[in-house]
Image 1 (tube, rainbow, N blue to C red):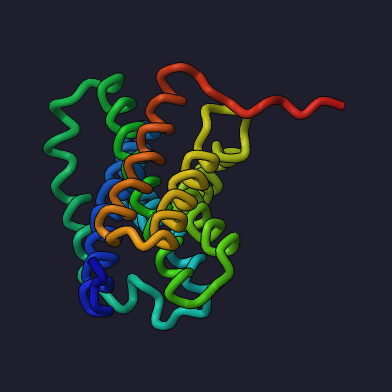
Image 2 (cartoon, rainbow, N blue to C red):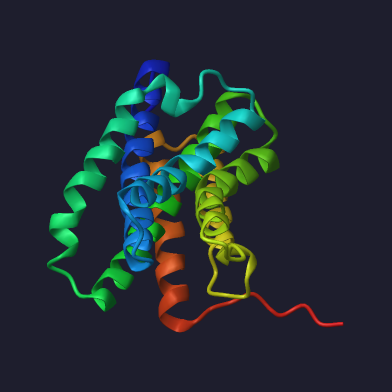
Length: 212
């Protein structure tokens, strides 16, 4: 099934929306854990949701930036930040930590695929496209951690993260090259990245330590 350009753009838009909602929730809950004020909640939600995609757009020279082109997406994040306080009051802190991990894993998978897809549309080389998937999926969290005065978790020896995004992006790229329908390729790449991340959290999978 070959999608028209308009259909593909619509699918990518929906993928971006779902990803930014998942990342915005993760960013908001991180601010909640740190007992920030409402401005801090919105700032972390915004950075987590839009940081990686902004860097991707700058690197592939895509204008206008995706959140400038769709200002309603920023309003969605703002509305989430206004609504989530009523939800988080019903959840204990340990449950919020689990929600952060799951929503972050989902957003990572969605953005890994959308980042690779936009890079392929811009006719980037395949490896560059996979790296754009990783950047889109992970650098929002990097910016969030920097603002929180932490070494970004993706650079620490913690459970697999960028590796999961890399695998999901490559599965999407491979299925696209094989002529698979775009919905199938995008769903498969997202699911692989998500499942790998959840499994890494459950079983403590990490990359080998670099030794001297």
